[in-house]
Image 1 (cartoon, rainbow, N blue to C red):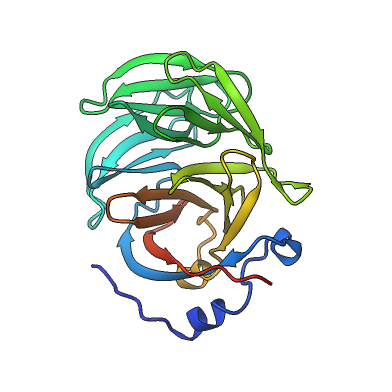
Image 2 (image 1 turned 30 degrees about the vertical axis):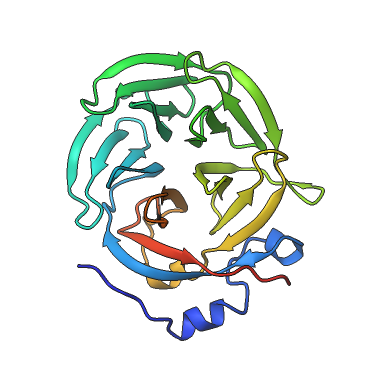
Length: 263
């Protein structure tokens, strides 16, 4: 079932105040945006979401946990799985990106990126990197990776060698724990580990050029000890749609970002 949300009391308040508990929002000079919920779709509450990508009408998701990590292709409205592959138990799945008809899926501690054919989901190779793998996206030329620090690393998609690196800061303050990434209208958008915000980042400078406060989603989701952090951003450039979910979340949200407000 799909719900079209009108702005209720909580949403109206959200447009004029910070809901997120993320401390940096209280001192940041970057503008802060709130959201309006457009639709709510089902999402597998057993999925420990680590990466989310929109591609040609479908969502692709990478999930984590050793022995439970998967890569899957899903219908948006129903959540029905179209294709799926289970990772070997040694791998903890992380962020993912699609580029040139290939799926690239990071692993957390194995320093290994698994490469698949987009149509068949057949594994076609492995690429290797140093450190931890967290988030992954692409600008159409390079793969762009986070590793849980304030670094964002541009990678050659053929070799996975570092091309260059940017350091993410809000003013003079490093923004660490950068997690799932998405390239949206010429910007890098990043989840922050265990926080209900998205950082909007300049790909050229690493400067935080804005924040998106997603705190109101916690009031809508059912209370559960199992439900974990916000982690999943997918952007549909043709339809200008934005999809959001999280680890063990039972819902996938289509949202619209409101005009940013200085504070």
